[in-house]
Image (spheres, rainbow over the protein chains, first blue to last red):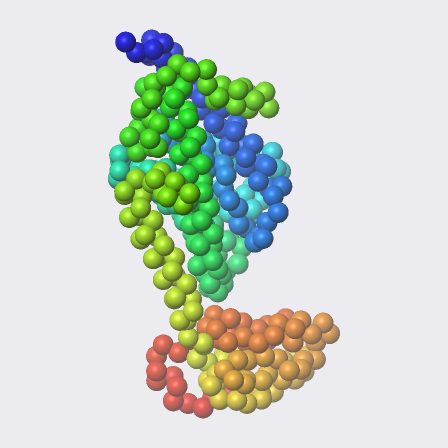
Length: 211
Length: 130
């Protein structure tokens, strides 16, 4: 009764790999584009790439989250030429703390927590991790922690925005038969629809493939 | 419209969000509530030469390798009035008042720290000259 998506486990494996590769590619693209945006505060980023990490987490689990996050930071920094610079250390430190907290909260409150919740936790973890690295490596001075409240406020807002974006993305992805086996109750309302509509997602994915 | 995005949060997300908002708000409160520092600690060549409370106005002449730097303590803040160094960066650093803030005159080997006064017994003395 199910559609073409339930065929062979191997096919599912290949799909997982291809989609994760696409997620990484998209995340790297967002990571790079974000640098071009005007920036009010030196280290502050919206963290748009996290949308893809969240999508990977809610469609393929914690391992996928780590793959997308870490690959994104490494490849993104390589492309921007900041690999192994102090900025990269900040990025990596923030990324590691954020990803750990995101996996922990996802695991701890499985089924209850949605993309917005995980995203906010991740964003707060990211700024805290960054500030920790900045304090350890760059400026060894306690007054740097006076920046934390402002960073947390920014992180809260961008975390909600990213979480909502991930929720919208997941909702439309779940309409596609490829994702139909990966129903997740904590996402949107559209998660259960099972139509074979000629979807809007395929063009989007193909665009990224071409990049 | 506002309700539209709130629909996308799971009930747990909403509770989590409230907790996080409170957390961020309290972090701001902690920042604002942070008392202005209690005392000024001056070191020359990493040796503490002068300690004084911030709440008493005074001018201090500090001897460094280059000459005399004049420090002013006024209205709970410290700033450098004059300095023998060439670039006068220390003067342009303005005034400091919060615990953890610092002024520095690198050419004159001078570092001025503001420290908190958690232990009240430190308030007893007027100043220490070493």
